[in-house]
Length: 392
Image 1 (cartoon, rainbow, N blue to C red):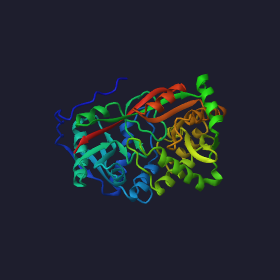
Image 2: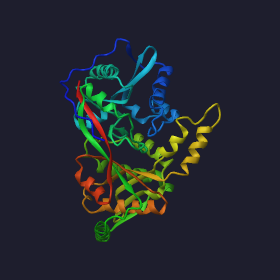
Image 3: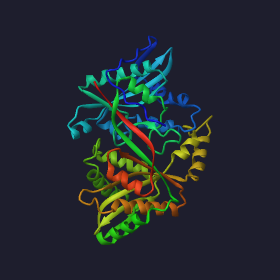
Image 4: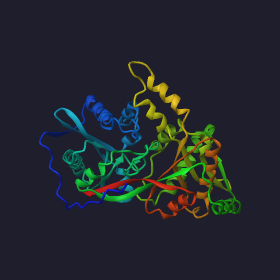
């Protein structure tokens, strides 16, 4: 499928329908409507994975989302004749702007019927709030930061989203571009089969580097989990420091994410590479829990019975796909073949555990070194997510 054309901000903006109103979310009923509007919108789409309503409530709860300790979010609902037809979040991430020396606001959690006028009403409301915060540009989608779900799917609609990635109808790109947004950055996903044999040359070089550099790889020790989290956090903040869009996580953000991942992780697939006993790189590959979430259809209970929970537990036993969520190497230890070693060890472990393959995502479009390394292992481009930008 071809990618949507990148539009010009000079194009005329769509007219807002007179019967559409946009209001901020203020009540618990509004918040419930904000969460639930997606279920009828995506009904019948075989590749959409319904989020758990309970998890979405927690995500929007300042007491449970570590980002909301320092970030600010304003939620908006668009209604036509009493019916919810769209939603959006305007997001203030002070840590992002402090780290990059920018003055950008974000938008996220965008959902909308196929009506450019409704989309414009939502973006106008978000832009007004962001301008009041003093921002001069807006980037998105960000849910709510670059450390979480990022980007709009613009290519690769034929398969479901992997865990912790976004999915949306194909028409969203046209709606966003009609409202004056242009591309800021594309993010790539790659598909890799566990049965694929990596090129012999790659294996030979990786094993030679493993021996020459004294690189050892071990899986995460869940019995020493707090100390392991500290080690991973140090590598994370060093490995991605110079990447586009990167912002360091707070301790609570990292700890919260680690606790969430611990619930679904296979420790054999969380690998730490060490050189002379020093942890210098890690990779995290997760079972694709979206396969199980799809069975629950967004609800753990129905008619007072744990029907969704039972379906979720049964489906979780049949997960055969993985997502390599992150692979990072400390500054000073790159170009030593550590990435290839981690890819190889992950592939071998996945095959041994009976997984069929999965997704490596996401990578920056201009991170040519990493993209070539994935392709050298047999990875094939499968999806593209786009981050958009617009002056305020």
